[in-house]
Length: 227
Image (tube, helix red, strand yellow):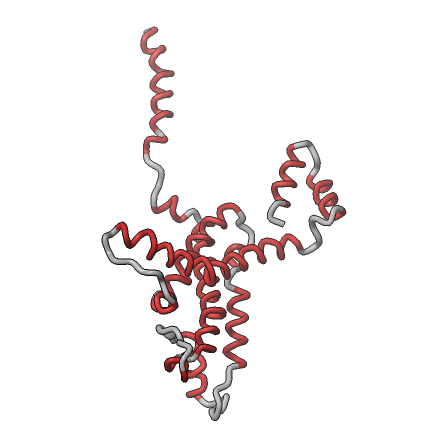
């Protein structure tokens, strides 16, 4: 589905009508009635999830391996504790950047990458139950939010009691909360890309106008010389 727009553009340049291109795509199995929504939506949702689950931790590893040595600071192989201590930053920053960049190339539904991770998180919140606590109790509602959003900053160990850390809770935070944060950040980045935010913050220099002024000056010069 990612290559379909380029394929359509190529056929259009060859002189094919848009209706003929769409009909050919459907007959060839390249497109189906809802592909215009599902394809881009799946692309951006998957990209946001990859940022939160895989790309962020990978970039954190590159930070410790490449950047810290350049600053003269001691570096080490990042551990699960490093990931958890930088959980929000690792989940949000890469998704924000990738959302901005991909939305410039694939704009459709880029700002909706938050929907599926939010649905999954809401489902987890609604179905969460704590033993010996009523679902309707106010303390239970607070507990379920703390369970997901109060990030554990220490990785569990394979010792009796897992070092006082809940491994299931860590798994839920990494697989549910991280994509949620990444989906929100990706959507914000996509909105910024759609509005060309960086172009507004860092506008092009006035040098782009100078050639026009130079051409105008040159066009007026012969008339002045003739006079």
